[in-house]
Image (cartoon, rainbow, N blue to C red; front, side, top):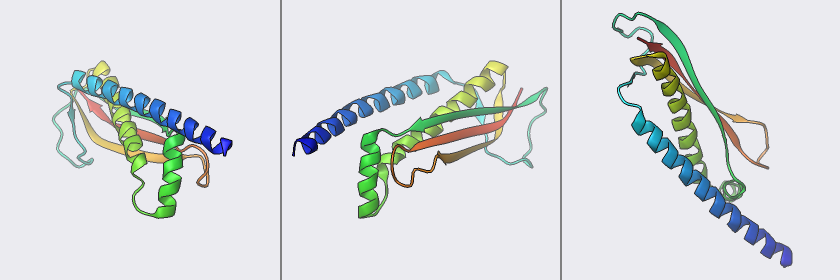
Length: 146
């Protein structure tokens, strides 16, 4: 019984601190997104008509994000019960936004006026077979032109 109480307390602490860290990251993302203005992003393919450019360069933004123990625990229960594993949706959103911001910040530092042919890919890192912490890598890449 004591072990169950300790587990519940630790799970609660993990939830509080994990939620707080996630909210701080979302606020940081929002501030950084508001600071980026004027960069045109396009997902058009290679055959799209692009205005004449002086220079072009490939830009990549990548990030690895990991879930906390609370999300992993809840996801385990969701797998048993079925349905969407909603606890990981915010993890994916944070990863996509962070990778895209890193790409945009490096393109702006280079002097790009637009990024074309933008692509975003995700991959799960490690094979944890449903045990342990889930980590995702998100990569955003595109061609910056000026």
